[in-house]
View (spheres, rainbow, N blue to C red):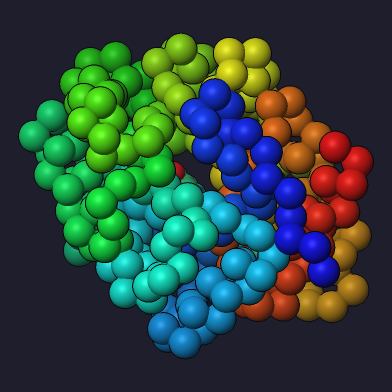
Length: 268
Ligand SMILES: NC(=O)c1ccc[n+]([C@@H]2O[C@H](COP(=O)([O-])OP(=O)(O)OC[C@H]3O[C@@H](n4cnc5c(N)ncnc54)[C@H](OP(=O)(O)O)[C@@H]3O)[C@@H](O)[C@H]2O)c1
């Protein structure tokens, strides 16, 4: 099977597959909407990474707040590092089952250095502000984006941006970011104007919650291709070649998602 094609991620100079792999479930199983689950072992994660390489899925989305996800990616990735764009996030701190946020310059620098160390790399392909509900406050009244821009100028990050939560925050962030992460699913189009504005401005777009964090009525394994396609195809038809970030621990689900991304790209 041919690998997925790659498309420019806005004007970042990076090229990304239309499907990316989300990793929150690789490192954390508390305070998530996905229902109870056991953290996977390293062998299961290596299998997912091998599948990704074979299919041409080249973007891994992670975050400092995803428990032990970054350290596990760093440990397991090994020689596969150059096959992937590594995107992480800063600003949210998850500890003792709870999130808090710190967008100070000092924390932003420390968090990026920590991500580089845990991911065992000297350069992150993207770092996004991991915004809380009140994303406008974090974007407007903190030095975090400015600090990320300095780290980009120093060569530690190739693109910077924000994972936003509101329409207002998203529209505010577009001119300030290289890449935005935006929630979109077949039942949730509230932030579509942000996707359109980002596409017009040449900004990269990562789509989160395309299966509504697993809450969409997806059929059980096998025979699910049309339901999966009905989520992934319209997402990939949005302007600007967005990357659909889906998290899965299940190789069969990953294969379905890859197949849906592949069939979508036949019509792009
Ligand atoms: N604030 C933020 O920046 C933010 C917020 C949310 C998510 N994210 C990113 O986006 C990624 C995706 O998370 P999400 O919350 O947006 O979840 P999602 O992609 O909407 O849904 C993921 C859930 O759907 C299930 N799933 C995946 N493929 C499936 C298939 N083919 N058939 C049936 N079920 C399937 C997965 O369960 P199985 O493991 O059983 O397949 C998983 O529980 C995260 O890992 C993270 O990287 C970022």
